[in-house]
Each structure stands twice: as structure tokens, then as C-alpha cells.
Image 1 (tube, chains in turn purple, brown):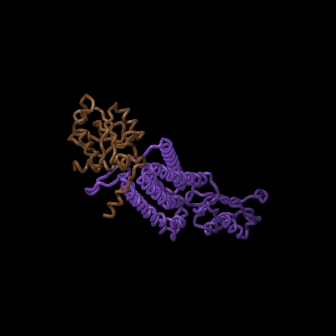
Image 2: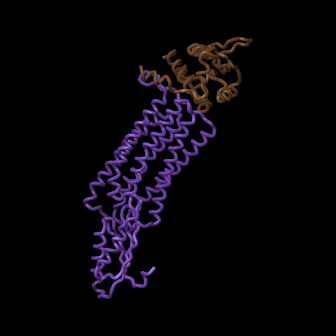
Image 3: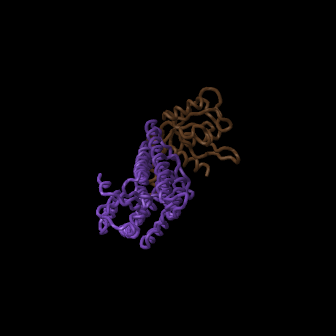
Length: 318
Length: 141
């Protein structure tokens, strides 16, 4: 049985991976502190609850990324002849499903609060011997919760693009959108302070829509990957790699026509190439195909394990 | 000083309970809850006990007089939810089943090993709740 060769990131991309791993560990640590602070200040505010859930969910992409970096580059074996690249997508699917369900849950919760006209009760907290309205403590906690994701989200954008890592990209997006959560929460609590009982639930609703949007977007993305859609960049644009791969193959003097079919597996592209050739000695075939594989690898480091097949010209016509 | 005055404007009551009671009437639902609150029979008899004293001193602190409204707890709670009462004094504990539907004050009595006693306020009337909490903590630091 022909099993796949292992895959290693090219040397110039390696530092970005190490950087991304550090950033994701920092995310886990900082978000843990945010979750604790928000939980302590939460009280009976719905917006705080929504922010808490979103902060909790922001553990999923970093955890998925860190787990999958351990697994995805494991060499293929008898049991998993295609290797472990898909582990990224599976981790991602789990995160996207959780995100969508929680978003829907909070949306339902805040809608029913508004319909029932439930007034949120926010009492007092004793802080350093002084009695203060708990709303101020909540606002302070939300302000703190906004800062780490805002900074980390920006820092993750570059490694996400260089590594072509969708988990990282989705994580960066989620982090960047976190300020909206915090901001909505702050406005909601201040609204309650001004005697607008509905402000809290409306803020929670806005947050839930954001969570839902994240969830559905990620779900669409990962389902498309698992469906073997053509490769797209982390920004959602159609990748030029298949086109360039075809051009590279056409550049070989013995190739008369070619078609390339690629899909994404985690951060690498795999697939097949169909070649039409003018006749030559069969004994030359292995050497020619080896050269073709080399040409493909030179197109982009993501091109990995493309199976080459020689076909008759009429088989290529659509 | 500036921060203190800013804090005093917030929070406000959506249904203006504190504003209405200040200088007017504080409507207080009561049930018999000895030894915290006892209601002697007879017309015009005022409730006695530490919880009744606390309510009277709170009312005095906002310049209100107390209108005692006796009744079964469930009825009183429903009226509190509809903002027809401002307070319920009934020997309630922090773990009351009404928690979440109405607002609960900070404990006014915490005994060794016993439950913490609280008063109930209308849901979301946060200015009233904050004023009451401050009064409780001032009376019993």
C-alpha cells in the first residue's frame, strides 16, 4: 500500500508557527483571567452572562489550534494512510457547533426576558470597605475583558495568513469582534443604571447575534472544507494555487494538456493532476513524474501529495 | 467627591419606587415572622421586632412614613412584582424561593450557622435597593 509522505512546514514559515503557538498560549492564560473577573462580577445581569459565555467560548479556537498542531503533522500510518491533517477541521467543527448553539441559547434567553418584561436587579457590593453599586464593578470587569482579545486578535492576523491556518484566522476574527461584546455589555449596564430596565437584555441580544454570526460563519467554512471545496485563502478568496499548478505542469515539455483538482486538508492542499502526454518510452515515466511532483512543490509549500495520472486527451474534455 | 456624587445619580429606578416613597409613603408588605417581626392583633397595632425596627429606621432615613400591608407571602410577592409594594418584611432568608423574581437586600442579620435574613424589594428597582443596602450596612457594619 502506498502511504503518504510526512509533511513539514518550510523553514521560513516555522518562526510564524512558534509565534502563533505562543500567542495562543497567551490567549488561554489571559482569557482565563478574564473569565474569572467576569464571573466574579456577573450577578444577575444578562449581558454579563452573555459576555461570560462568549469569553468561555473563546477558549475553543486556541485549544483547537494547540491540539491540532500536535496532531496534524504526525506522519501517516497503516491505520490513517492520509495522515492527520483533517484533525484541524474536526476540532474546528466542534467549536463552531458549540458557538452556534450558545448564540442561539442567549438570543432566546434575552428575547424571553424582554417579552416577560423582567427587570434586572443589580444591588451593591462592598469593595475596600465601601458600598458601591455592583453595576460599576461589572463595567470595570467588562472594560478589562475587552483589552486582551483586542490586542491578541491583531497580533494573530499575520501568522494566520502566513500559515494559512483557518483556526487561527477564525480565532483572530473572534478576538477582534470581542470589543463589541464588551462594549454592548457596558452600554447595557449603564442603561440599567439610568433606569432603562430593557437595556441589559437588549445588550445581551446584540452579543448573542454576534456569537451566532461567528458560529454560523465558522460552521459554513468548516463544512465547506470537509466537503472538499476548492482551496480558498484565509480571507475567503479563491486560491490561485490550482491555476498556477496547472501552468507549472503545462510548462513541462512532455505535457500537452493538464487538469489539476485540489482540496484543502488542514493547512495543506492535496489532490490529483491529470496529464495528457505525447508518446514517449514508458521506461522514462517514473523520472518524468518525479520531476512533475518537484515542479508542483515549487508552486507553493502548501501543495502536498498530489497524485499524478496520465490520461488520454479525450478524457480531459468536460 | 466628584466620583461620589456621580455614583449617587446611578442607579435609577425604572419604576421610580425610591423617588415616590421619599417624603411620602413606603408601602411595606408584612407577614408574621417571630421573633424577627411580630404583629399584635387589634386595629392600628404596629408590628414589632428587629425587622420592623429596621424598616422604620429606613423609612425615616428617606423621610417616608410606613404603610404596613399585611397578607399571605405569595400575595405580597406578586404585588411586589407588580410594583404595588416597595418592600416586604417577612423574615425572608437569602435562599428564598422568590430569589430571581424579586430583588433581595444585603443581609440585615447573619447568625452563626443560621441563614442570612434579607428584605425583598421590587425587581429591578435598583436605586431603592442600593439605598436600603447602604442603610442596612450603616446600621450594622
